[in-house]
Image (tube, rainbow, N blue to C red; front, side, top):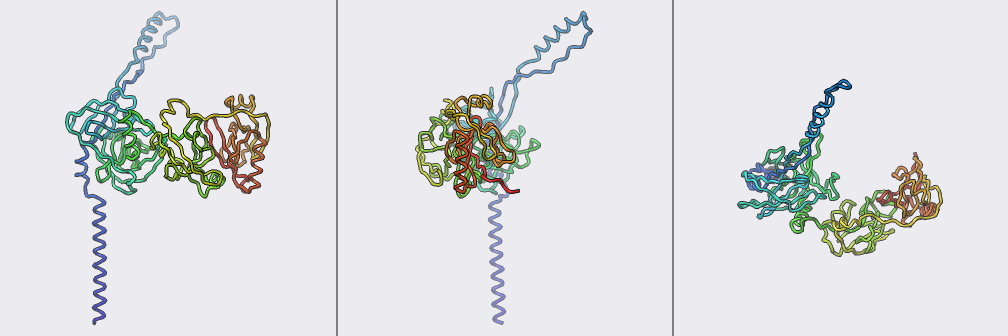
Length: 489
């Protein structure tokens, strides 16, 4: 009897503990999934605004056509003069009104929106939730990140939105979007963070937060909030086959935007760090040819003449593994890291060069100043003596005046030009094509087809599986990993 009571007691306690655990789980779920966003939205709505933009565009209305008259008709000159006047009168300028969203970030009247919302505006009006309408002036824009900063002169106290830390946003977190979709101001939608770090080819610094909170035309420039009421993103774009929301929207992360907004407020424009290199992704073939354990980092294809990198130890062919103490996991991370670093800062850089790590430092320049000065184009060297040859399925030639004219190369071009490609060759499969100029093979400069052959033979003797070719195509340099043997079918 005693044994039965003990077993019953143990079973009862187990059931009780399970019930408590389930209750705690349900309470946690209730906390993470709020029953209502009403209290939160009530606090946030006054800080979200509608942006109304007026642009003046030239329009040509359809004019009536001159009727067909018999040749020599006495009315021909009369009608011709009449319809000519009609055609000239059809062209006129008319105002076009577009709308978007924005949010207040400063009690003195600073408002954030998207650059594409106000681009080309002749007049900008900001409308608040209480119906107040204020003229806005443009403080500054950043087309690269698609951010703009406006200023209004408030007539009373403004509700200010607070920036949040977008890096802490997790996939599955609740988010709220407020804006002016399709002209319906003050619209609130809710969803979750669907993905992080999205690249939609909108610009050089793509790192979008993806959300399924409904975003439509007119939401652009509006805020994406976390459940604390902090702005973790600026709603910017949607993916849609219909033009309306299908649950795939994108927001600029707050940690990218707030630094740009700070610069726009201080300078009226951005001041981004500039390294002075052209980079490319490290593929599987390139990683193998470079001796890396796996594809990672950013491969330096060109070091821009007179740029910051050219004044340091960074060279074409190096792989940037770390920048300012942060690992570079893939190529597209580096431009954001550099852009967010202060101009003039001395930055430590870890490189992978010919099978070993190399450490160096570089003093960053200013990207905008470099663009203004027009020094972002790569430099080229001198030509070489005529010679032809074939290797890896490539027909090669030294660069001569005739070749320069045929392929429209710069007069000071250097290297070895590809004049033909075997369609069945590994090089063709990797995208090498006639007109490409080979600058290096296996990180050594080449000037003649014989140089290319010699380097390929050396790589084969070293039992390398991939030859790393550095190519110039137009003004763009890149590395290509070409297998040294054809794959068996």
